[in-house]
Image (cartoon, rainbow, N blue to C red; front, side, top):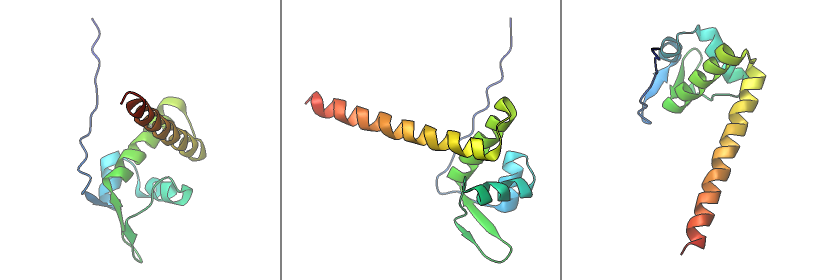
Length: 105
C-alpha cells in the first residue's frame, strides 16, 4: 500500500498579499518572487518604492512555477511559456464548450 500526499490550496480571489506574504506562502525568497515579476509571469496589483502587493492569482501562478521548476527543472522563461500555453489551451477548451452548447440548442 502506498501513501500519496495531495496538496490543495483554496484561493480567495479578493485576497491581497504583500511580497513577504507571497514569499512565505510559496516558501521561497522574496528575490525569487521579484524574478517572476521581472519575467512577466506575475504582475503586482500595486507597488510603491519598496512595497509590492499581489493578488491570489499571483500566488497560484507562483506555485505553478515552483512546481514546474521542482518537477521538471524548467527555468523561468520555460515556465512562463508553459503557463502561457496552458492558458491558451484553457481558453480554447472554453470556446469549444461554448460552440458545443450553441450547436446543441
